[in-house]
Image (cartoon, helix red, strand yellow):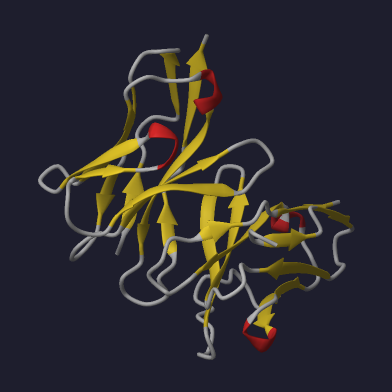
Length: 114
Length: 113
């Protein structure tokens, strides 16, 4: 069975500092991993995905994520946080056994402090 | 439109009533998904449509929930005899192909009184 864990419910970071939002996964076989961001009263916006290839994946709004197979992690990172990055972030892994649906983590609320 | 469109954006109804939620996916996207986002439950998969194949209904929580997709485009999610635990945000997503990135609508916020 596939699953995703986001160990931190809340992450606070000062504006201009680097940010990391953690994600670990459990799959059988090769993982298809995703990060989404959700702003208040909005749906989820796709940030980036890892399917295969380079372990460092670059995505929208200056975000990137590093796939680490040995640690089964896919942490989201950004070198310099903006106040507008404050939102709810979800890590997800794709079901590879049937429906191609996504299994989501419980989300991490990022607050960037001015 | 450019993105996934869902209607209504908000729905308040009494317990026991039936509701219909609509999703209009991105044009040309063959895959369509329904998810439910509840407080304390996170995001859970409900149902998946891919082209003309039979839908995968494995995530539907009870037989009160059903969905259809007409003409490979618009989808409706129907909840019969609504219960208070059905209160949640219902999100629809579509993707160009089964393995593509999923693009989400803004959801329908359903409140059961």
